[in-house]
Length: 276
Image (cartoon, rainbow, N blue to C red; front, top):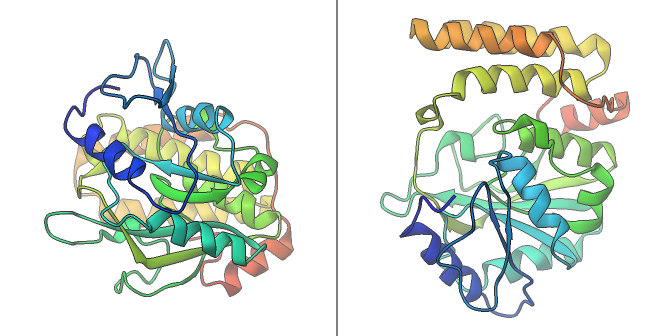
């Protein structure tokens, strides 16, 4: 969106410096014509801001390759073999759909809890199989991404990574967290977005209604609602969350693609049943 004149060139420099990989890069201008783009890098300019997940879909449809690396433009890769290491993991395991590196703040080295794709997130350096993803910096097998239908573009922002991960698992794939590969990203607060609480709640409802067996939808939403009623102390944030929750219940979640009970069992065995 041309609002990161320092971070974006740094991101691109770290991307083009990757070694032992062949890159096909496209920069998506979400409601703008991208600026500060290195020579030889293709761009796609969208007339309006269609949201982050749909912007990613547009970018993915414009590139070729075995693997897709989705890269927020305020992140950067401090090590030149990061992409090769992630790609090697996917190449070695045909049942693996996505791999996520460890995201760390470049100043403090802190990995935020929301960046660790597991319930037990106290140790961000512990690798293993995961059932969700931090979508801003993740590598996905291209064929699996296409078969899953890509990101839920209409979400605009928040929870699109869980949606894609669940659909990849429903195809029989798994995901892996690889904390030895580190990506730097500033530790920002998602609540800085004015629409955070509304979209976070609405998309959580959409996520459940799109993907879960009917019997699990009320369990999933009840667990989320009770947790947020307990956590939130700000009245304005609580009101916005409740408004988004009601908005989600009214519809708009899109095409329903219910996961099988076998997938539910696989997710549970992997450490995160889809009601949490």
